[in-house]
Length: 140
Image 1: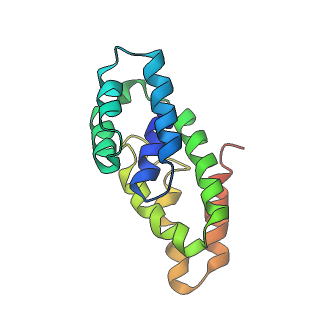
Image 2: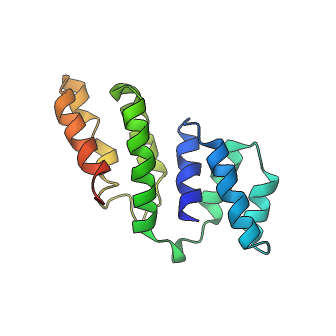
């Protein structure tokens, strides 16, 4: 479920992970056909915003594995970091941070999402990259 949550959060920021999200959802549903949350998400296919809001509201945070989530999210963000211009990537990271589960948003590496774009306001691209690269390599 941690991967599913990561995909939903990235979709909400406008990154194109719909196919990966749908494949992950389908696999989880096949393994857990009695799970009502997964069933509801299957019926919401195509509704990115609705799926995001629903999963965030119904996610079982008591069984949430922050390390598994973080490792997966950082792998996906590393790809996006390489594929996008720095300012485009940075523009979405604060919003991503705001949508993270409350219990991890102030822990590293997630906390870095809150402030890593700040150096861009004084044109310090180097420091911004150092912060993002620290975050992306946190689990390595």
